[in-house]
Image 1: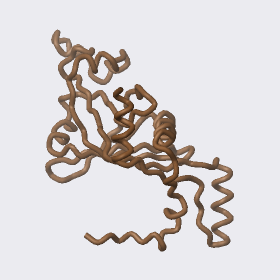
Image 2 (image 1 turned 45 degrees about the vertical axis):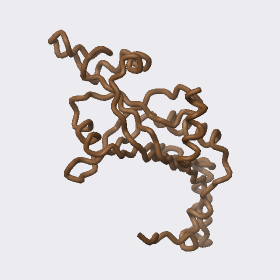
Image 3 (image 1 turned 180 degrees about the vertical axis):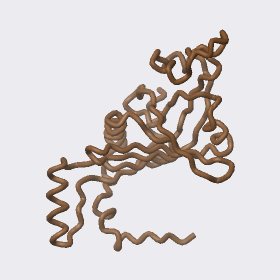
Length: 204
């Protein structure tokens, strides 16, 4: 398929892209975006072909180089059927105050590893499962409904604001009059090669 992208006709992207940032700095700034937002949108594909998204809160990164995302979820929910149908997913985060955003494209894996669940579990998660009063589904870390969705990214793209609200407004105002292009931030890509390199460090 021939690409319809024409960099010369898209000056915003051409000016905003920054490929000179080191992988470690990219991940550091990515973590800051996610930390500021907390909630992401997990998008999966149903067998019908429809795309479904829902709000999910990832666990805290365990290292400065971690690029994977872990989410607690209920195995009885539709998202698990959809992940089994197609493991390709997207996670997106957006900070409406700073306008920074991030988008993960990757593969979702489902885990019931007890040690992994215990490592990340906290009492506040119980409220999303509830105690069914049947002696089994107690809404705790041993509840068989509790699972972890791990999203292993193939590529991560994000936009980080480099100017505050006043600076953005001023730049947009000036360029509206002059016909210039407003670029109050940077577009960055963490490639699959960079992800593999940094994850080798993460698991050491």
